[in-house]
Amino acid sequence: MSDDPIAGVLLAAGMSTRMGKNKLFVELEGKSLLRRAVETARDAGLLPILVVLGHERDRARIELAGLPCQLVENPDYARGMNTSLRAGIAAVPDSAGAAVVMLADMPFVSAAMIRTLVERFRAAAAPLVLSLYDGLIAPPTLYGRALFSEIDALDGDGCGKRVVQQHRGEAIEVAWPAQALTDLDLPEDVQRVRALLGDAEVSSKGLSR
Image (cartoon, rainbow, N blue to C red):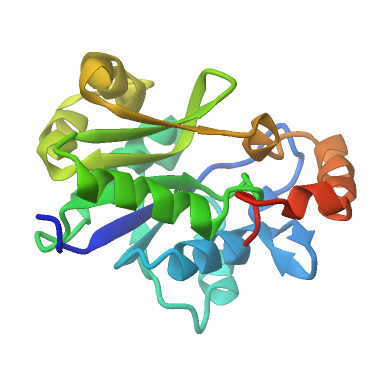
């Protein structure tokens, strides 16, 4: 188990209704959020990298050309993120011992952060490794293979959160700076994040790519 590859599951199927356009293609530092997220997973050593697509999937395929990832289509993406989580986990190959679930709209999640989750998983017998930001649980989240069947069995919103709640007592928790939780949901978030990326403090230890 300790030497098994760890898969990446990037949830990228949503419609970005609050943004008013598909935020996957918003550019930061000359790259789309989608491409940045896949490159982060690649740099972290996740294998394979499974990108779950739905809304504007053809455009996403073009955007990801040349990157080492496998595309997973979620025809039920309009029903919510839980359907993408289940589709991604279902596509994880048997060779993988766990999967790190990521969101594309968290640009300050770094490869170093993901590698830390993987290291903590390999060093312990815990089925779950959680990221905490000032006590708030948010992605990236590492689910051990032992939890895959539970994710698949749950329907409705928040299936991943329910698995986390059920196994919180067994989980390893890793704390990150609150700023790493920054995501993009609204148009004004884009300028705010671009300003933060220009701030030297964002590249401080633990957040550098």
